[in-house]
Image 1 (cartoon, one colour):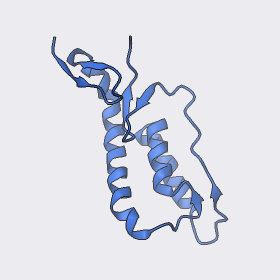
Image 2 (cartoon, helix red, strand yellow):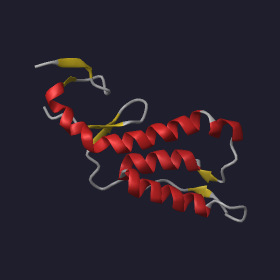
Image 3 (spheres, rainbow, N blue to C red):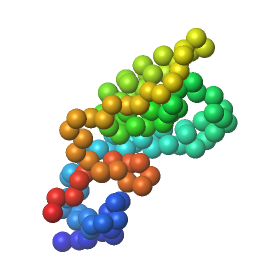
Length: 116
């Protein structure tokens, strides 16, 4: 049995035999990676112009983390549609998923919870 370095949470070792558990989160993590690249590059050029808190890109990251790539992207698109010059803005957080069963890495990627 092969053992890789410490998992993304830093608290436990990851076995290659558990790799199948990563398959469901790969699309979600790819979407999150794209959003993080957007936030680090394009979003920085606009500055702080969003009427809502958190910003639309931060909302999108949280929505994809909590609800998956398809539903989270839909939630982010609806949020962007609400963001227009006549919007009142304000605080608009993502509702947490009732049965969220993953952990988050320090960078915001989603990983399966460790079964001990």
